[in-house]
Amino acid sequence: MAAFYAVLHECGRRSMNQDSIAMQRIETGIGEVTLALLCDGMGGMDRGEVASGYVAERLSIWFYDVLPGVLQTGIYAAKLRKSLQRTLFRIHEDLRQYGERKGIRCGTTMTMLLVIGRRWYCYHLGDSVAFLLGKKCRRITTGHALGSGVTRCIGIGRYHQPEEKRGRVSGKADFLLTSDGMQHHLKETDLYHALQRERIGDREQAGKALRALAKTAARRGEQDNLSAVFFRCG
Image (cartoon, rainbow, N blue to C red; front, side, top):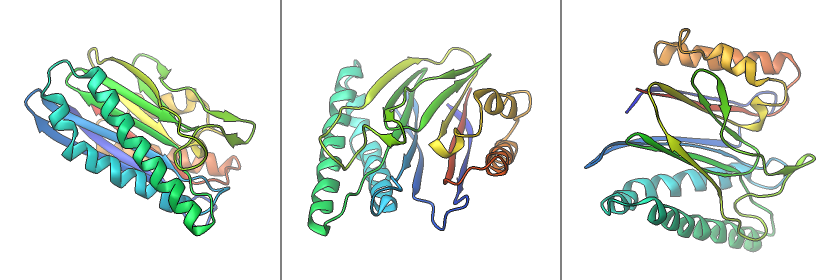
């Protein structure tokens, strides 16, 4: 169902990009299923790139190895939530125990979007953002942050269940996931104007628009990593 996608993954003014991105698709008995994932390793902690990469890898494995079985049940929303929460809890504990062994704090945010048939499911922890771009720019997620700190993440502290939002894809729709580095100096109107459907006809144009947004953010003073995933449905 996803016609095309584009990703942005730039260091910005930092020496390393601690964000990780995954974009996966499979064909199932109910049609194409798409996974878009953005994990922002927490730069104020240790080894943020390890945490974000580990979460992206484990959720990609879950997508291919576990999700098809969940979808065979027909009525799958509750089973999908339960399966994902079990996996996220294990990932959280793995990272927390890794941090204890190494004497470090190792955490990451997570914003994940699944498009199954004509329905979308968003699962979120942290301060990255998911948008639905249609006739207007609709923010799907709420931020789990207080001041300059993140209040919910994977790998540090106690486990939090992810925020869950879901909806139906009606007609044409585009989705956008952005790290917090794409939000400090960019307004939602900047994102929507750059990625309007009339302007974006293919993957190359979408990638060019994301890079232009990153340059604008950097020009306005952004210091953080700049990461985003854009994909079109229908």
